[in-house]
Length: 95
Image 1 (cartoon, rainbow, N blue to C red):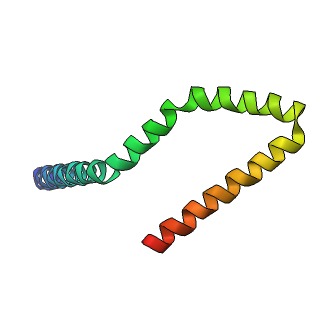
Image 2: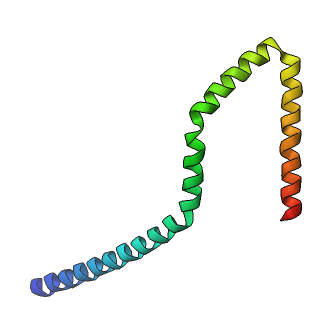
Image 3: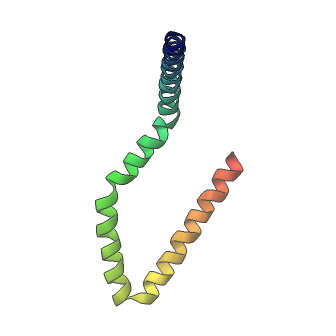
């Protein structure tokens, strides 16, 4: 009985190891597919992060300018928002 139990345990272990191997292969294939699908987003994110120092400097300058000339900054920000919304409308119309 003890031999039979050890034999069943060994068979079960082999089955589990084979199942794990198949799952690893499946995971590897899915991860490669995932990397291919997300590569454009990763490149875009990296491009945005490369502008981070300039954004920090620009926001500091805008803050100082806004403190000195609040009406001009308000007017300028409304124009920027209007321009962005016009771009969205045109993009949606062309799509």
